[in-house]
Amino acid sequence: MTYKKFMSLFLIAGSIASTLCSCAATDSSAVVGYIDEHPITMEEFNYFLSQQKSSVCQSYSQLYGITSFDSAFWNNEYGDSTPLDSARAFAKEACLEAYATQMLAEKTTSAEFLSFSQLKENAENFNTARKESTSNGGIVYGPIEYSFDSYYHRYLSQLENDIKEYWISTNAVSDADIDAFYSENQNLFSLNGDADVSAIYLSYIPSDLSADNIFLGLEEGVSLEDIKTQYPYVTDWHTYSFTNETEKSDLLSHADIVSQASSMNTGDVSEPFLDGTYPCIIKVTRKEDAIVIPLAEVRNRITDYLLNSRISTETELIQNRLVFTETDAFQNTSIE
Image 1: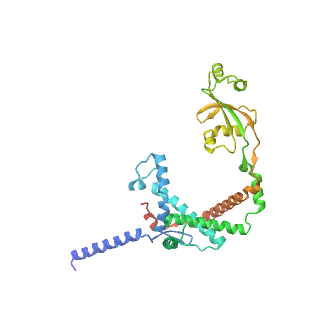
Image 2: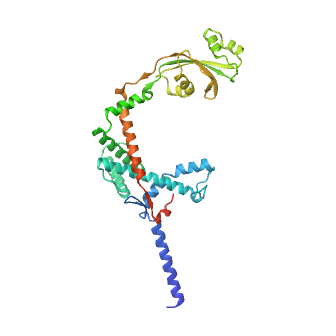
Image 3: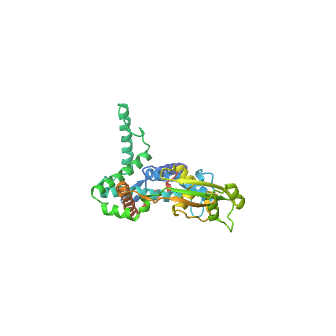
């Protein structure tokens, strides 16, 4: 074999090997990491990675004023890391959280732990069944076909519901737990009593503000124009009635007044504060006692809250134990 032929064959072999290595590195089935004994494929991690795209772009836009998010953006260094590094870190946490949820369901309800490929297959079968049902005149609720992302979140949510149902059946949340939470958090189950408020708006806050005298004058029938003449910093006067029937939009429009009045009693006059952007003072002219919602009406809500809190705590404990171990192929993960 001549030297030229040898070198030609050597270069061709090298090119083929390089191509094969490149394909292997970006192969969707390549294992990029492990969580315990569970292998994480390129396809799976890139799924979690893609979920971080929007939040990472928004974060870097706010921190560094970035407006262009092309392929170069992900590998540029800002501070000590690249946006891709940040997205990978967030993706790891999201992956760990999803695995922790599955592990908690496996531990409590004996649910089978499903790999990413199994989930993909189940999603396809799920959509096929829905399409066949509608074509045969059946009724399905929600979209006929779910995106994989929607299916995955639906699956994790169903696992959490199954965990809650299991804990309910085993009295994991006792009556004593519910009673204690209700007693310790009465403010969460209280409705503000009806209140009437008189509000005076100011152009500025004078050092000799005569709030009591202004309110007294208005209560005695002095006209607003005469009040303005005597107190030049007064710009307007309004009265408000807030009840549990008050439209939410009205409450939000005067959220600062509602908040201020909530800690006042009948006859109290406030210090100056801002109602939105307008300086004002208020006087509570009538206020009824707060109404506490009976335990029987909020028992289910408390139960659900305690169950969700327990799921969060148990999931976090599992997640904190888990470790995402990278393989060499991890560096080939990318955002499309």
